[in-house]
Length: 191
Length: 188
Length: 201
Image (cartoon, rainbow over all chains, first blue to last red; front, side, top):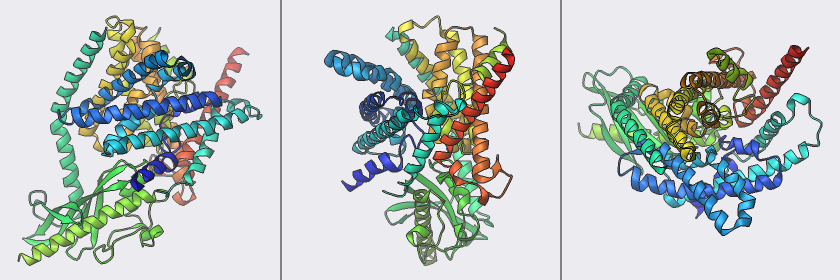
């Protein structure tokens, strides 16, 4: 139990996917100007990341390694993620149209979210067990959601500030993200 | 439609399989060159082939590969290959050289996935000046620790986890080397 | 379109990093030094040129509906090839770039250029676009790497400019990446706005 707690705390705070590992920056900058969008994107990423890590770990352990075809890892993983995203979109549309309206628009963007593929590859590199992988994926996604929500909150306020013209938009957002990353460095050493 | 995708993936698979096999030799050579290079970096003055006479010893719960270095048949030290799974981003593998008293002659980090610019600095950091350096220290009398944990080695700034894992691998290597030295004197 | 004009257009006017804001993850993650940034830029450029050429070559054979998955497979193939070659012939480089090599697959620049350019132009212009975008990306990463290395450890490409102890470690660490990139984008925009104004006047 303690081992999983350590994985969770490390993945959310110490080794935050956005602020410490620089993954998933594109949606982090792109979908963070409104708090509602940020929450939607974060939840969609959480769902995809957990399911895709589960599937890719199974494929890695029971297909690629026995066949000695580890070199197909990148191709197979990205296809699995792309297919999963498509399937989720279709299922969501059928089962819960309300949820689809809320989260659907973010789904196509997730395929090229490098955090999803990054986590899938990282758990195989770290040699994590299946349970560990899924816990790690979930915690990482929560870290992403948290980063996105905090950042969106700040950006909504930032719009009211008088920022020099060339700094408006992305540059000031990046600098804000840098200050947030500094705050997250305070967690280093825990876990 | 799905056929086009399947065909593309199959072509990609065959192409990659072909390149994988044809570069296999070069990849093996790159890693063995790296090993031989690392061994000659960490011990010197030997006239045998340490890789040919390698042996494995148990240190704690892990296995350490020992590459003995001899000169005129006399044991002058060894290179020990060990690893730690507790790096910031997974496994760290090192090769460390020891003289027969257990003093560290040198080290090389042979594989790691640590953060560039932070943990990745360990290949230079621990041969730096003053209390950063591990060269000449003897972990067999007292295992090395970073100063944050009350030890004597200054860890990499902002990369304590990497530093701890590195020292853990180094301590394991030392334990393995000492076990090997004891065994080889007993056999004489 | 002229070959060199395409390169200029893709590298400067539509610079992937400073203007299109694509491929932010490797931009931030691998630029702790000028050499690292440049290596990452060149690796991406290599894959981009190959994938642009291949996608432009097969564009008429691929049905519209499975276009994106096929592009992804093509890109992933070249990325894996690159990874194998690096492991075999440049293991040190492969180690220092780490996870960002396989992650070239999801670099938005590659799929973005495939979709926006290579699927609509002939092979020669697609190669030119690959070179241009790749160069723009490489220059941006090298510049960011050099600035962070200079401010953080007082050297550029490991050549010492001033003592390391004067440097602000912050710039080598994660926050420095965000802050430095923010300032570089602002400077790029300022210069671009100025040159447009001059042209109009």
